[in-house]
Image (cartoon, rainbow, N blue to C red; front, side, top):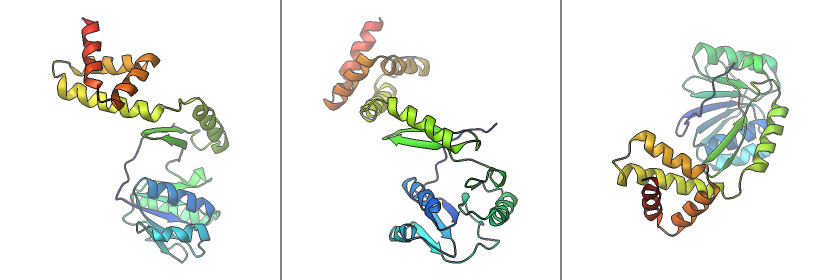
Length: 214
């Protein structure tokens, strides 16, 4: 059994061993998350090489050497060489650095779920390394039923949460949570919240909801 977390890696050093398509996908995701990425591989694919235009990516074109993991917050081994994966795993483990070897769960201490984002929403599905293909299938099913306006709804709910804390100090945390759950679970209220957010009238909507509770 694994413990799921969302890890803030903005500004942190991440090492990626490997220079192919899989490594390239990892690097793109890491750049999006704000990581500072070091790629180590003797051969670098064209797509990955193009990412060096991003100042957060450094490429070291050589074979992996012991010591390459030092100072990293995370390590990814994106090679098809089990021996290298094992060497990277041993080093990262000695340094207490989380390591993921792609398609090699025996040489991993964490797994990367299949995920998608819609604005602030991030949905991740994992089978604990048992079947990435099944995780991807389930992720696609979930992605297909997520409302298209989810980003707008999240923007509105974020603003409402802030307003409740700042302008309704008489409400305790449980009461604020109840208001947010009431809105999130009612499609009509979500639509009104989005409209109020767009019209800068969220305060009026909350006043109305507070009055109706009395």
